[in-house]
Image (cartoon, rainbow, N blue to C red):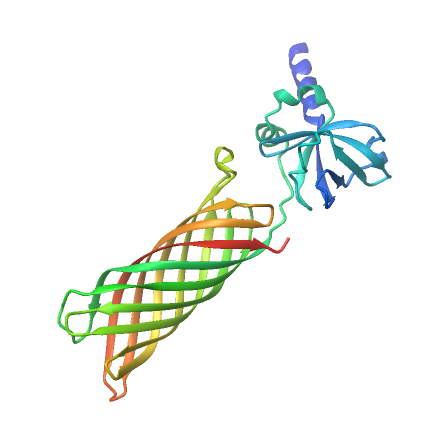
Length: 292
């Protein structure tokens, strides 16, 4: 029984040694930051503490303390504050044990819930695509070569740490080469996606892999040798994989690839209609910018 009480006491003491604090702001120089705790929490001017977030640990000194806020200075002239405003970090009093901390393990073991602040971002995408297979109504199956360029603007809203919703606009231009002619097709589409993000990869710049499933709907137009047809286009499904690499706190560089199925229903000037089903492979890059 005594052993059980002793183990329980040790566990509670260790758990209480770790405190979640919110980063209220980061200075322009990047060497000081403010947390939402102060004298009421036992913090005093001159106190040293260890702060951890994911796989980052640093020692900081309290240089200004009020009842509710504390300004901390990083105790390394070559290290800037790796945190962002609104981020929840773990504060630990014993600075001499910095080498022994495993921040992510400790946070998951002793902290049951963490505050997550969803962010809003905008992305500019450019990609190339090539046709894998195609079928056209009322047309003989003839070999063709398809390929083109896609521009997208996407707005993304995080739901939680793993899921996000995205929507935006796409403009694409495609060249179709067949034995008899060369055609040019363009599409303007609205897009919607749901995205799933995996955990960060500390060994590779905290990059995150992501999977997405989406669809698009809009207008399509095809031109060739004096003839023009126009109508509707549906992209369903869009299956995408991407690698998101942080460039800084507010910008990600994205490498992505996707498979898409596109159906178009177009009408010529003489009233005849034509439908096509095309499977494409798309690959490209993007820059994603967070608003905060």
